[in-house]
Image 1 (cartoon, rainbow, N blue to C red):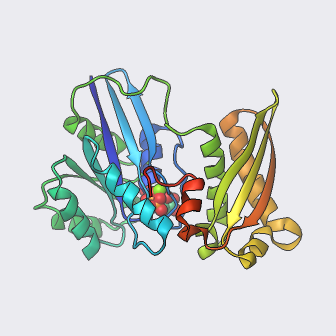
Image 2: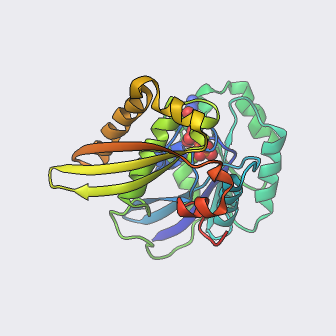
Image 3: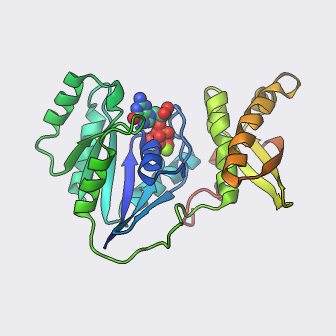
Amino acid sequence: MKAGTVAVIGKANAGKSTLVNVLVGEKVSIVSPKPQTTRDRILGVLTQEDYQIVFEDTPGIYKADNALNSVMQRTAEQTAKDVDAVLLVVDVHEGMRENDKKLVARYEKCALPLIVALSKIDICSENTLIEAIRELSFVNAEIVPVSARKGKNIKELLKVILSVLPEGEKLYDFPIVSDKSERFMLSEIMREKILLGFEKEIPHGVAVIVNEFTDRGEVVDVSLDIVCEKANHKAILIGKQGAAIKKASTLARADMEKLLGKKVFLTTYVKVEEDWRNSRRLIKEYGYGEEEI
Ligand SMILES: Nc1nc2c(ncn2[C@@H]2O[C@H](COP(=O)(O)OP(=O)(O)OP(=O)(O)O)[C@@H](O)[C@H]2O)c(=O)[nH]1
Ligand SMILES: [Mg+2]
C-alpha cells in the first residue's frame, strides 16, 4: 500500500487547516479568519484500504514578532524536513504575491516532492487563477487548484499526493485520525471561539489550559484557564457582567459536547500572565513547541 507523511505548509491564513480537515474528513485542526490560528504541528490521518496519508498541519509562516511566534515558525520548518512530501498551500484569490513566489522557490529547492495547492478558488476569478498557474509553469512541482470550503478538486489533490508517496506500511492503526488528545482538542475548541469572538491582539495573546477533565458518566466536567497577557484584555474577555466570555463558552461547550458525545459542564477562569508570549518558560509550560527552547 501507499503510506507516507505530508507536511502542510504555507503563509498564515492560507487555508491549511481547512484543507487538512477536508482531506481527513474530520475536524482535527481549528480554523479562523485570523492569521496565526494554528500554533502546533497537528497530525490528521487519512486511512483507506489501499493507502494511508498522514498530514502534518503546521503554524502559518509569519514574521516572528515574539518568542511564541519564533517557536511556531520553528515547528513549521522542522515539520517540512522530516516528511515524504510537502504540500504548500498558497491562497491565490488575490493573485500570487512576491513572497508566495519566494516560498514556492524555497520549497522547490528542498529534495522532497512538492505539491502546490492553489487555495480558495471559490472566491478567485478565472483570470487570476490562470495567471497564477502561468507564473508557476516553470516550477518543478505539481500544481493543483482547490477549494477546501467547496470541496473542489480534493479528489484530484489526493491522487497527486498518492502519486508521490512511497509504498510502505501504515504508520497509525485505523480509526486514529489525530495524534492529539481530547484534552488538547478541548483547549483548542475554546481558543477557536476566542479567535472568532474577539479582535486585534486579544485572541493572539490567549492560551487555554485544561485544569480538569473528569468523566462522570453522562456528564463531563471541564474546567479551563483562559490566560491572557494584559489586565485590560481580561476585562474585555469577561465583558459586561460576564457576557462576552459566556457567549464564547456557550459556543465552545456545544462543540465539546459534539466531540465527546456527552453533556459538558464547563467552567472557565480568565487569568492574566503579563507578556507570556515572550516567556520561554510559560510557552513551554502551556505546551507549545516540541523541542527544548
Ligand atoms: N473562500 C474560502 N475560504 C477559505 C477556504 N479555505 C479556508 N478558508 C478561510 O480562510 C480562513 C483561514 O483558514 P485556516 O484554515 O484557518 O487557515 P490556515 O492556513 O490554517 O491559517 P493559520 O493556522 O493561521 O496559518 C478561514 O476564515 C477559512 O474559513 C476556501 O477554500 N475558500
Ligand atoms: Mg491553521
